[in-house]
Image 1 (cartoon, rainbow, N blue to C red):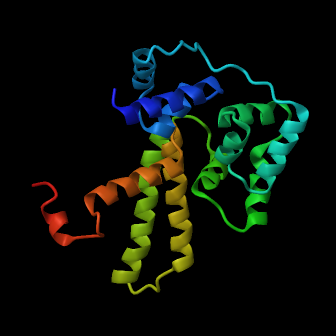
Image 2 (image 1 turned 30 degrees about the vertical axis):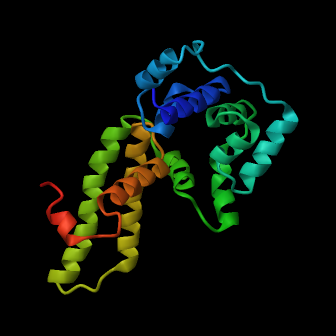
Length: 215
């Protein structure tokens, strides 16, 4: 095992011991749960049947929720207290602390991260067949955007910017839904896209690299 892979595996194992599930690790490190388990076996790390339930005392819970109310992300809170995001969510749920208050949080901050948007968007998801709903919905809402442009370009309409913004928002909703359907965050999707573009166009867009990309 290469040294950098070994270090990453030990990092994953430490997070797993602190309560991160294999699903969370897979989404964070972009590898399968099976590959993670295989790495643990190769390093002969003790098997953990399931993440241990970490009990969060009342004062710590209050501190976590106060930080969340200022707009701090779950990832940063989890890192600060050495627990997983799932553990924090469970603790909030058990104590009746609803993350529906996220709407108040982002309004207070005046800005929103991609993951915060995804959390808010999922409030209106049925939670069923998310991948199917997300991908099919993307086709429909993209068509709505195209229709607005078509009317502007070919039918003499003024470009309805406000309507277009609303439809683009619907496109984002379905992107968030599809991402949730495969267990990843919008920031995971965005990060992977940027990394792909950096590999493809290291110095910015290049027409020649684009033309010969498949050669």
